[in-house]
Amino acid sequence: MKIPFFKKSCPLMTAAALALGGVIHAQTTTTTTNEVTTNGTISSFEPETFVIKSETAPGPITYSYGKTTQYVDEAGNVVTREAITPGVPVTVHYVREGDHMMADRVVVHKTTTTTTEPGREPTHKEAKALREAAKHPDREARRAAEQGKPFPPVDPSAPKSTTTTTTTTSDGTVSSFTPEQFVVKSTTSEAPVTYRYSKTTQYVDDSGAPVSVEVVRSGAPVSVSYIREGDGYIAQRVIVHSR
Image (cartoon, rainbow, N blue to C red; front, side):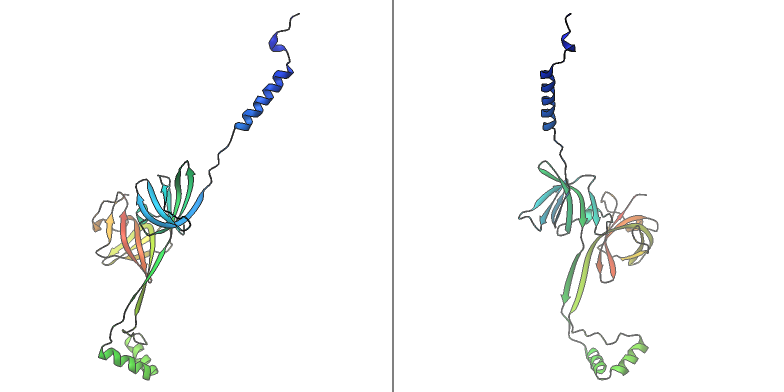
């Protein structure tokens, strides 16, 4: 009786199949993309890419970004892309895709600058008050307390230092808007935050188009880009979101 070929057991074919399977298995690889972090300072921010001057690389580094790229401050609060300008220190979390580096998360750090202004010559009245305070501190302290004045009196000849901290953007809802300042109920702070504004403060919509200051009214959702001067906050740019 002739046995059909496909029902035969062939050790050589079995061994070959196992060997071939081993070759195929050996040639199968898995590519894992790990996130990498770089610290540096923004040099330029363009559509689709931005450049930073790294603290460790000899030359500038270009990163791509997309709709899924996140921008946050040091506390993890979301900031607007407009807050990332040349000179801002950042930490870039990215993955390498071929020859490109795709930014996954950009952490915007605070910057602090201190400026010092020279003092001026005190007036005759100011000079007398300083002399009296030095000669009779107890008496002058009582007088200052009664009149609600500071003691010791300010010496105008002393240099004046001002520390400015550049922060990022705070999101929230306007609680009140009055001359010179407005209050925002922040999404990240339990207490309302008061911002001062000036003639240079910009008001824009989500697309960046200028809007009238009148649209910043109670209940309006906003993102406020600001700087910190001493204990106060000064609004630089207010983005009024559509409801």
